[in-house]
Image (tube, rainbow, N blue to C red; front, side, top):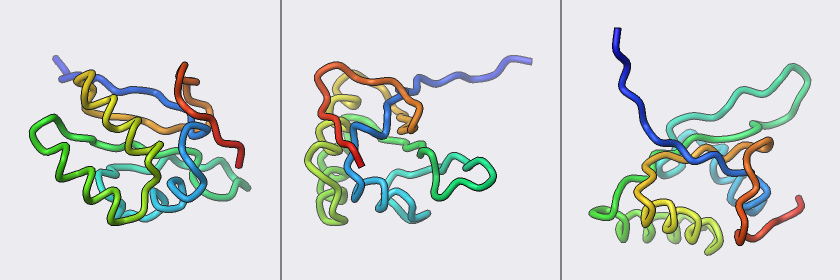
Length: 106
């Protein structure tokens, strides 16, 4: 068997605002393809996986993010991922700290 593989950025949820995380809790959140499962007794999701598209549809997606209410910091992360050609991102509470990205304590 040969499986297809994809590039996925691993990013700490400390780099998104609490409001961004609340928006991502919705199964209808733009670009969201999955929420990570919580452990027994934990509240909320520890993270989310998004398909962020590519340069061709980037401006349209950014407008959707703004219309829904995502922060400019969230949009900046998504824009940088698109610039680097990374099509998927996992925002995880245990994810990687990204040098130069803002950090929020919530």
